Image (cartoon, rainbow, N blue to C red):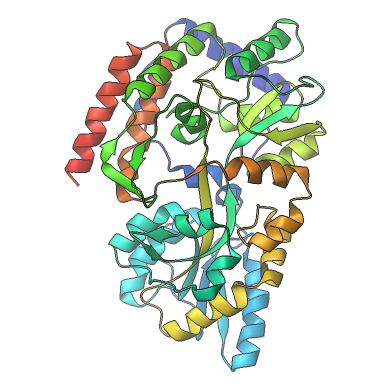
Length: 441
């Protein structure tokens, strides 16, 4: 589990942050490469290793000796093994579930698949698809009539250039967590939310007006709903919902307005660029922040903290509706599967059932992609809050060009918050570097 920071340490850290910001900060830290959001946004990616031989290791992993081999993470491994055992008994096959750190599954499949050491099936995130498909690592998956069982946005996310490559399992997005004791009413808009939060800080009732992680490399993922409310995207979407890598949007009129607003919030101290995941999580969980922007991976932490909260849409900052990125996790069949027919049968007919969708939800507590299961569990107001807001979101781009965005745009957002240049110039310079990187392949 993620490490908690004691509140005293958090406050001390924030004091140091304030000093750093007063000095104008530094761009050295901001030039560090940004991690891809799925790794950060997925709680399982940071879980401790239960099997040191595989978990957390980037060393080559050998395929287990079995007829059907599945690579998954710690959280989902027990239920997948249980289902695999049932499948194996019914079909006279051996099934092995190998437990890996979620963050290494994609690269290990690309490396080990071509040499015959990869699995037949993996669990993965939809934004891996561009890299997996361009490397020929995953096979198309024909959902057939089962497609209607899943949320449309989930199927769309696990498709690349019109072809579906995975069975959706869970849908996730960030939303606004509101401490109902500190902030009994939903804010009218983003600015009033920050102002109300700052009033609580000034009164000594909170340490942060808004718990929003930024960190050393910026955080394009968590800032995206704010950006979209200004009428800006990362890439323009085509009519079929796919993204056009040649039409970067971060420096359009809305993107510049967003940058200028970020600068004002940074100068006013309303959004602190050195608040990390740990600081933001601790502040809200301990009742020292009235609002937080984060995802379902933080629900257990906040619940354990004992705060009363609701999950709702992030209010608009720029006048247009805010739209979060929607991430989807699912099961994919390797292009190097030793028996693709068996692998497809297991994914579609065993993992793709309502019963398994329910069991997976109970295991991971993530909003299910299986529509009927989602409808059933959405009586939980937290699940409903994420689901209703996520339905307004946009799939996280799964095109390879997105890899060129995280670092430069995240660094630009952090520099803007720190006041390290003119907002428009910083975002325009980042856009030109990103376009050059995409053009260079």
